[in-house]
Picture 1 (cartoon, protein in one colour):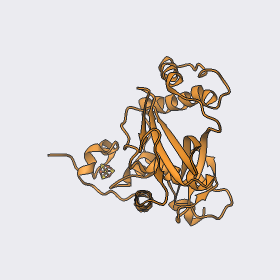
Picture 2 (cartoon, helix red, strand yellow; picture 1 turned 45 degrees about the vertical axis):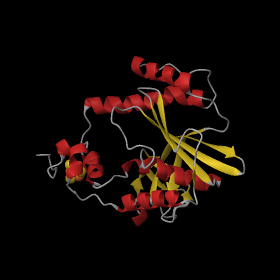
Picture 3 (tube, protein in one colour; picture 1 turned 90 degrees about the horizontal axis):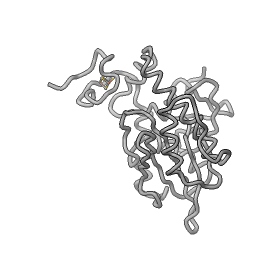
Picture 4 (spheres, protein in one colour; picture 1 turned 90 degrees about the vertical axis):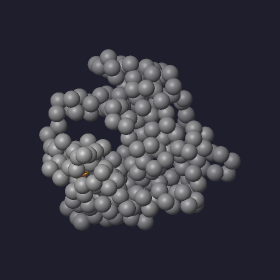
Length: 243
Ligand code: SF4
């Protein structure tokens, strides 16, 4: 494997303060409840992606009543749009350019051309473009089915890294990023449902710097006050617990 593939951090693995949870997560055998949660995420996609793509009039029923309930909620709030893409693999180069990627194994990415450098890569759940006057807006939406509250879209490095890649891919001048919480049917857009951040703005530059810095964070333990909110703290011998 070439060096750039070893150093690549997936978009969902971009973490603040400490990159050690990535390593612990890879080593640890998942519990039955964690596997169930992952299954439900996949089932939600099986149920809803045909509907998002306009192939079915409603989500496809799956063998999980909870997921079917989430899917029905989604049906009620989703607005159909032309040209929507789902499960779109996106890579981002060390200079912030889009890179076509392949995913030969789940959550493992490599440049499709075999040589382009990758800073991060991942899959966008849902992506599309919109026009606002002369501006082309790239829109990225990540669906969350778990109980864990992710970082809000204003600074969430996963969706910003995917969004910056998608924006470059389509030649957009602006970006909107969002999360959808399947358990509640709520959207959380940044900067707002009909708003956008211009890619030539100071704010977009700060988000790019943030993604770059987090991608550089290695997997050494860095204990600190943030251990309290780390989901791997019960499996980490270095964890600092609050007094
Ligand atoms: S408990 Fe603290 S040191 Fe351990 S992985 Fe989590 S953040 Fe890092």
